[in-house]
Length: 356
Image (cartoon, rainbow, N blue to C red; front, top):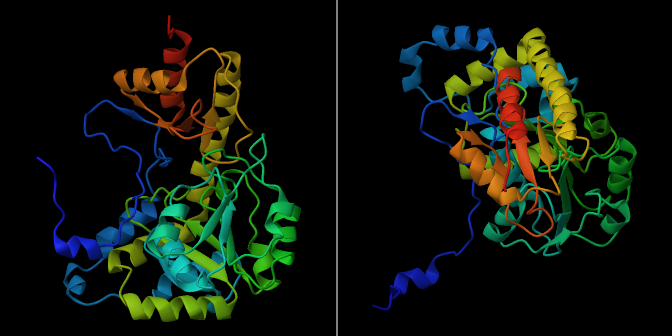
C-alpha cells in the first residue's frame, strides 16, 4: 500500500539527523565507541551532588550559571564576560550556528570532521562547503582564504585525532577578520595545544570545550565557549530569546566542583594519555596504521582487514568501536581509549583474530 503524506507534513522541516554512537544495554561490554572517559568524575562532584538541597530543585536555576562561569574563567585565565556555558558543547555549538552564521555565505568546515556540523547547517538553513582534507587528513589553510560566512573545525580533529599547529590556526583567523572562526576543542586536553591565548587577540574567535571527555561528565551535559565579550553577549541574546534556564542546578554544582579539582583532572587525563601511547605501539605491532592522535581515541586501519567486518566481529565479542560508512574513511575504525585492562582485552582479541 502506497504511503500517503498528510497535508501538514508538507510544512515539516526535513533534515537528516545526526546518528550518535550506540549505547549498548547488555552487561559485560567493553565500550570504546563514543569517546567517553573510562574513569569516574572527580570525587568532589559526588560530594557536590550529595550536598545539593533537594528542596532547591523546585526553584529555577541561575540563568547565568554564575558559579560555574566564574570557575571556568578562573581556570582558563579569562574574565567571566568571556565565558558562555551550555548543555554540553553540542548545545553551545548549535547556539553558535544559530547566532553567527546568518550571512547567506557558505560556512566552511572539513569534509572529514564532526558529523553534527552539516546537520546543524541544514537545520538552520545555512549554506555550507565541506572542504576536503589532504590525503593525510590535514587541513590546507589556503582553502580557507576564500569568502565565507564563517569557519568551524575541531582541533584535534574528530574522527582522525590529528592536531593542526597553532600557527595554522592563527593563520586562518588572520585571513578571516570578517568571519567568526570557531575552534572546537572537545579533545584538546589529551595532549593538544589550545587556541585560548588567541581569544584576547582576535575578537572573531570562539574556542569551545566540553566536560564530556577529559572531565568524565558526558552524562551531565556541560560545555562552554570562550571568546571576546562581544561574541559572548551575542550568544546570550540568542540564548535568552530561546531558553533562559538551559543549565540545571545539578549541572552547575557538579560542573563547578569538577572544574575546581585540577589534580584529579590531571591524574585521569595522564592515565588516558599513557594508555593511548601503549595502545599505539601494540596496534602498530599488529599491522594497524593510524594518524598520530592527540585525542582520547585512535583512528585505525589495517590493509589486511576489512574495517566493517572487523567492527561487526568485535561487536559480537562485546567490544564496541565506531565505524563510519563514508567515503575516504570506510576502511577505518575509531577506537576510544578505555582503561588499560580494556585496551589489553582489545589487543588480545586482535592478536587471535582472522578474517579467513
